[in-house]
Image (cartoon, rainbow, N blue to C red; front, top):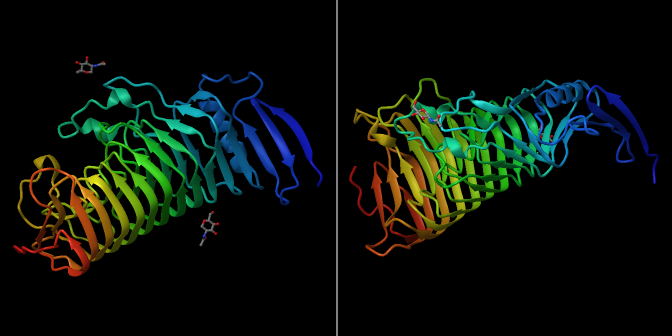
Length: 401
Ligand SMILES: *[C@@H]1O[C@H](CO)[C@@H](O)[C@H](O)[C@H]1NC(C)=O
Ligand SMILES: *[C@@H]1O[C@H](CO)[C@@H](O)[C@H](O)[C@H]1NC(C)=O
């Protein structure tokens, strides 16, 4: 056994343990966000956390911010880099967002990690957004839904791992990933009611090399949604439901959107979701591109519209033009998709009349309709997929381009 040395400093409100352990040669600085009664569970740890973070971030050897077991209030925190060395945010307890009523406003962010390289988030703890009271709004009419705090944001975070944490009852999206590169999410759990509006599980935009693995997402909106500029995204062994399924898009709403390129969704299970896997773009859209998107080995359990490309996506009838989408979709494959569809229309490939979908492949699609009336069907427009293997329902038997 090696040398083990613990020196305890008391610094301001923090217990700071310098632990030169026998595990490798690195030192771990441990900034406890609580210490002997200085910060009691149930008190607001915002200031303590910001201070612990800035101390840890300044360390030139790997450091760790530990939030121990207990329930802690956090009014909101932006945890910023760049840091001088790898940093770990070890959340063992429960962080609680400010409570809300039905008219709550409180900015668009609760917790943010920004400009950090080599971040690890871990610990088995919970980010509790306490969003239930804010879920009653009608998002069709109300801008309110999109202006609530997102539980956890990762902005410009690189080479990082987010694992073994839960996002609970977010007021808006649970996790938002923007401008990130090489970030892996694994064993992440997301929980909110089926009826919670605008609570996408993980939304990714303008990011490269992002993996979401072995995770479980139960929420009221998209399980995972990919916005413009999502590149080299892998989603594997994720279980979704309830929720709206796994979505690429919606794309084409705003000018200067970046292309979506290379998305692999594989080995996932969707249960009781409103949609399965889909690509959606707005009609009369801005120009855009989405290519190289592959959906493989996916089990559908009582899922609405299990397979869908929708280039006429227009929720709440807010589009007044019938002009086609100008987002070019190409290189799409659906391979080994099986299980049950809760809608008779199980395969819907509606592509743009201006830019028909290119290189679409359907292989081994085996879906059964779990409802009572009618037969399982497909609908296609402006697409001629290459079809092989089992086809239930037969894909694109009627092409009404
Ligand atoms: C929210 O605002 C509406 C409209 O101003 C008001 O009628 C309602 O009582 C408010 N609800 C709460 C919980 O404050
Ligand atoms: C990606 O991030 C992981 C986790 O920090 C790191 O181990 C790996 O070296 C990074 N990969 C590249 C290509 O930088």
